Amino acid sequence: GNSVTQMEGPVTLSEEAFLTINCTYTATGYPSLFWYVQYPGEGLQLLLKATKADDKGSNKGFEATYRKETTSFHLEKGSVQVSDSAVYFCALSARAAGNKLTFGGGTRVLVKP
Amino acid sequence: DTGVSQNPRHKITKRGQNVTFRCDPISEHNRLYWYRQTLGQGPEFLTYFQNEAQLEKSRLLSDRFSAERPKGSFSTLEIQRTEQGDSAMYLCASSLGTTGNTIYFGEGSWLTVV
Image 1 (cartoon, each protein chain N blue to C red):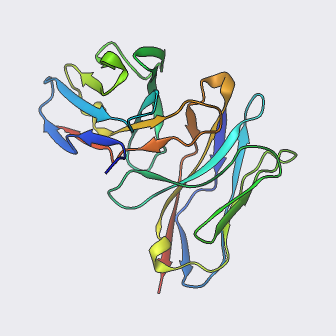
Image 2 (image 1 turned 30 degrees about the vertical axis):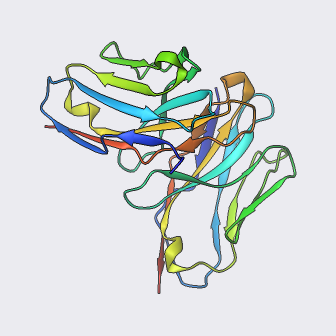
């Protein structure tokens, strides 16, 4: 079945540091890949997505590239802010699985001033 | 606000009671999903609808759980005879159902069973 594995947190950084969160996946076919963010007490918000190999998703300074050869979709940001403190979820959807999302376990990121 | 709306946002109930959550999806979305999320975990799929048809149910959805989407609009998730292990956030989401389309989530309904 489909699965997503992402690095465990928490990840603690200073403001303006570089952030990387690793995500790898297992899926049949050609899934679409997503990063969602969850702020405290809130639901999930889409951060970025990529629907085919070599696509790069980007939003709010975050980027991730769909790497089919390594089945990865690592999230990066060059200079984090305190407001980026949240839990980040990597996810995939596949047509063969009804296009529902399969999530990783989440990575908590804490940015200190 | 045209996003996914969930009610109630918080529910505290005694073990053994029944609870019902409601979800109003984005109006033109034909797909509606329910997920469950416990503290420190990623969301787990429960079930989804294409219009009014329930197309898939997870093994997590025991006989005490039932979901409906009458007329393909809003949906309800009912939990009968609640147990402490049901305490979680129940997330509703909707989408247009086409491959690669974004799935939009509501803010969730927190359930605490005491």
